[in-house]
Image (tube, rainbow, N blue to C red):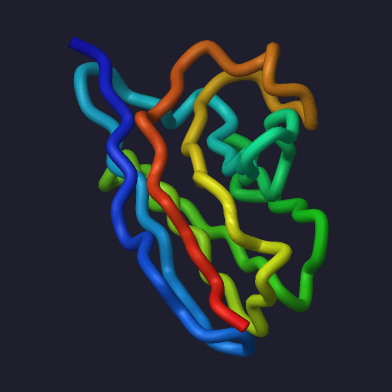
Length: 118
């Protein structure tokens, strides 16, 4: 069974930091892009950051989000700093074709809640 499992979400005060982790199992993801998306209540799922199969990374805010992957561990992390209440959302890990579009990713985790209090 192919799975992506996120961890590390929680409640943090505005200005604080969190580190999310995502572990894959059931197959290797070394030839896939691995990405983070988020979805706030009433909003569409939004791209946050991606690490391609070569380790190159892109994010919506390079000062706030740092993404890193470890192919040996079949995992990807998302370090988040300077969080604001606008960052409150369920954060999802995904694997698939490197893209900003959620529809290009074939595998998804169940999501982890990040709540930033003001």
